[in-house]
Length: 167
Image 1 (cartoon, one colour):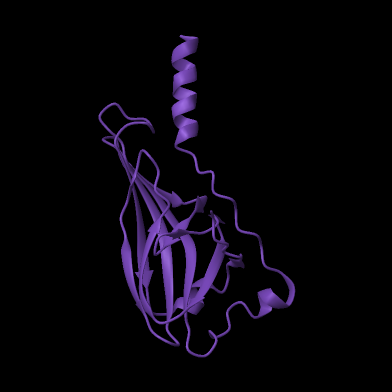
Image 2 (cartoon, helix red, strand yellow; image 1 turned 90 degrees about the vertical axis):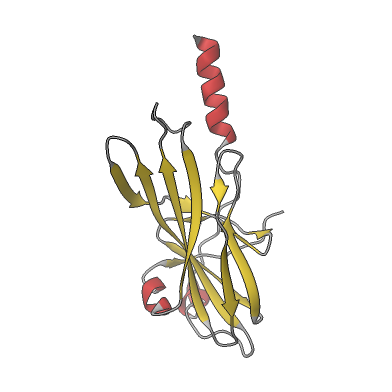
């Protein structure tokens, strides 16, 4: 029985994120965090969305406690619930996903960023429990919703955090 418990704990730990957390932005940098992007750039804000659980018994939705993003194959530090990250990027096409785990599917979203454009990427997670229930069964799907209207108004109440590339 102990061996079975150890296998379960090891499998659960293997699915947990090892991505470093984003650091809070304070002071003057926090006051200017929501300002317009530098000339010739567009802005993508990043934040955590919902954690959906779907089971045979019923469904639930909660705020996701943490999330991480990958932009054109480059991973960035993890955001916590209530925080918002920002990247000022050159105009172009970007593919945004969440970090991929061994036991999950990450569905990519596309952004055609324009100079002066402002976009919000919201990370969501859905767990569709299998017949046996539990976190280790069923499907784990990570999605990113892309919003283009009212972006600054949606993120202004959140805590600014630095997004740092992860090796």
